Picture: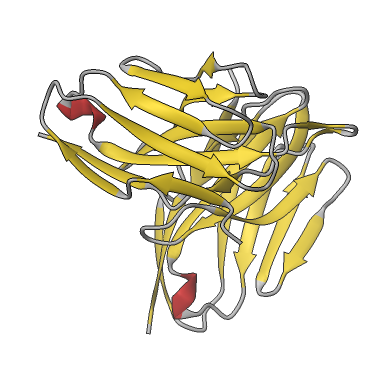
Length: 112
Length: 117
C-alpha cells in the first residue's frame, strides 16, 4: 500500500528562523512528489514539484530536496515569515495512477 | 481567474437530511476529485472522476454519491447525512492524462464546511 509519512506533526518557530520539514514515502512506481501549502480556511496550493531526476528545487524562500534512493524529501524554509504559518502537505504520485497519496501534513506556526 | 469553485461554503444539516455540494472548474481539466479533511486525518479521497463520463470510489465513499455532470462540473451528494460526515469538503481538479503522462498537480477549491447535527 502506498504511504506518505510526514514529520514533525507540528512545529513552532520564531520569525526569521529557518526550519526543515520531512517527508518519507513508499509509493511505487514513483512519478513525482509535490509540496502543498494550505493556509487556514483555504484549499492547498502547490509549492514545488520534484521528479525522479531532480535533487533540489527552489521557489523563493522554499527549497525542496528529493533523495529517490532513500525515498525521502524535505522542505526547507529560510528566514521564516508570519505568512509561512500554514499546513505543509507532501503528496506523491505513482506512475499511471490518477490518485496521488497524501501525507497528513505538518502544521507550522511562526511567532513574531 | 476562478479556478475551482465550490458551493455552498457553509452548510448546517440535521441528521437524515440530504444535500448536494457543487463543484465547477474552468481550466478544461479532465480529472476531478472530492476529498474530506478532518483534524489529524489529512485529506481523504471520497470519489474521483478520471475523465468525463467516469467515476470511481476513493478511500471513504460510504454515504456519498457523485455525478460528473459534464467536463466542468462534479457534484457530491449526501443522501442521508450523519454526524460522522461533519467535515470540510474539498473539490479538486487536474489535467489528468496528457501526452506525456499524468501531471499530478491538483488545483483545489476553497472548501465547503459541513456540520451535521
